Image 1 (cartoon, rainbow, N blue to C red):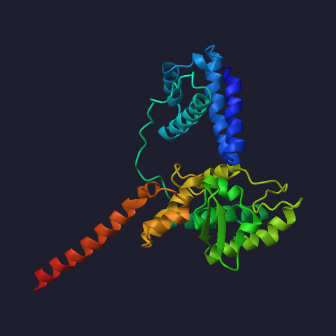
Image 2 (image 1 turned 90 degrees about the vertical axis):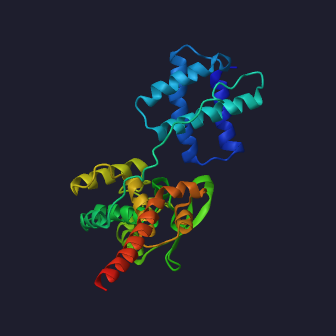
Image 3 (image 1 turned 135 degrees about the horizontal axis):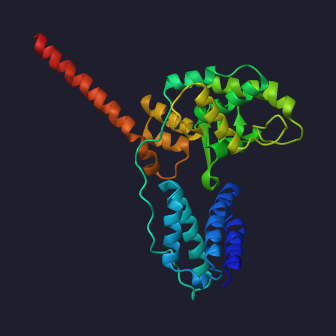
Amino acid sequence: MNIKEAYDDYIMQLKVIENKSLNTIESYQRNSNVYLKYLKDHGITDMEQIHVQIVENFLMMYMDTHSAASGNQMLSCIKGFHAYTVLNHPTIKDPAVSIRGFQQSKHLPVYCTKQDLEMLFASFDQSDKGIYEKTILEVLYGCGLRVSELCTLMTNQIHYDQKILRIHGKGDKERIVPMADVCIDQMKLYQNLVRRQWLTNRTALFFINAKGRACSRQYVHTLIKRKVQECGLDPRISAHSLRHSFATHLLEGESDLRIVQELLGHSDIQTTQIYTHIQNQRLTKAYDTYFNGISKTKEEN
């Protein structure tokens, strides 16, 4: 079976039958294009020609320049493609079925301290661009959104009167995210003073640029990098770090892990478990404070 025909069938399956989101399909296509180019460069044109050694060689090359997380995303894409093809064409063998994923670090991703955030938010001026960009940061941090969720946020998902956002996350699952007053004030400022001027068509997207077009994910990532550099903060801080900061500060404020899971939109509590070191630190601190207090009392007596 021709590889291109098999790939086209698979993408159609994702779009029409599985009804995957546009972001998911674009991600699959980006990864698939890298994989398909490798196969083409090695003279492989039919599905029957692909065996496990070819897939492993591709992954070894890919991992030279990518993280374990990126490698697992690529492997997931490859496995999905081959599994679908084998399901519909049983005579073709699945070359990726036995390949295992890459070990990922269990360390907490970089997050911002409250002092870092104060510096970031104080660095914006009151120009239209300054208000726009500060609002982006306020919503990323104050609501713990993914960048993709921020860029696709619609005006009808915002409920100022109830102080909530209705977010459509991964798998198109809806979750309710509360908004703090400071975040609401910033959003209203942008909406009334800036968005109203920039609006050139009847788009329902909340975040639009000066040309009236959708705010892109690339713009958000570049914005954070620029601001981190301007403020002299840890260069590892990224747009996703604001989401991590949201979760970390909630747990530091003694929120329950299950609540954080709901607010982040994690389908599996294990994904949220990465933040449990915050709870462990809090328990250790409480333990030390209590028992050190007892020891001091005994010494004084």
